[in-house]
Image (tube, rainbow, N blue to C red; front, top):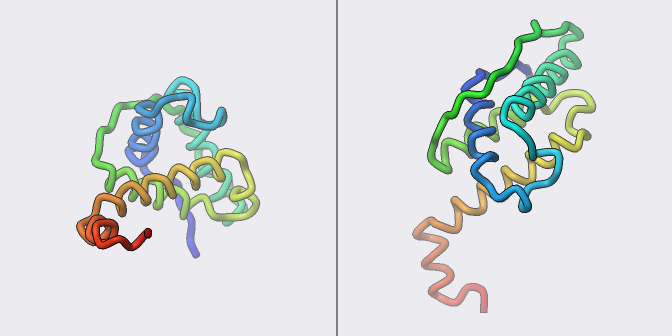
Length: 127
């Protein structure tokens, strides 16, 4: 599998989503000001690429820009980001694990809004 540093817009979308969540519902590692959080996401992604190719990507200062999106767009951003960070020991970091849980939650929220899910609930699938 190849790894690359995702576009800034991908990180911006993730950070924008996280900033919109109730802070008490987020693990400490995902709290804080958007510039710092975005810089940490950028650094984690760069570390994964570095572990994959043993070459440090160019350091880029991160300044957050608000990027609104649908829940589906956020899910895609999280999925892409986490796939590109799945190198070396990066997956063991608290930041990666916390974002993985956020991704699971976002995917669950999307699925629970589908007509098929609602029909299954209405049909008593959980009784």
